[in-house]
Image (cartoon, rainbow, N blue to C red; front, side, top):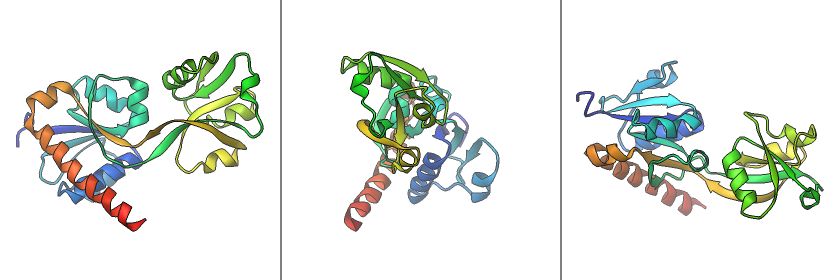
Length: 220
């Protein structure tokens, strides 16, 4: 297969990458373990049908929107924060988590005249509180958001949680959930129209994702 026929898929590095490659392997798209363990940021499947570029989650929507990648796999939270102009044809059901508001135990957020909110999701945080008519000062952090309330940098945080254990260890409790998130397949609009392989990838992902979700439901 020549390079023009090959699909480029941007994968969010970390757990999302692992889960996405595991789904693809169930569909017969296999990437050699040596490729996965290598430090290369662009790897191929064994049949050279797909090129996977491994990037930071926040970069996936950028690569896809600009057509550098035909498709991408990243969390719904990242797509919602980026507001990228991409198609989202499929919820893969992987890496499930929640975007929440959390504060110190006993903290009365309603007492704040202007609520200070620390987050890696400034757009979603501002939109959430604006929808409730609450004045906020959004403080953007790149990491260790849970520290902000204890250091009196913020009254609360907006962050992603899976089990909530990190919040508890930092004396924080969930106040409310903004959205639930899981891995989504996103697609460049031009690629969707011009490359029939994109629709094949959507069908392939859809089949295996449904099987995995059905098996999980039966085992509960």
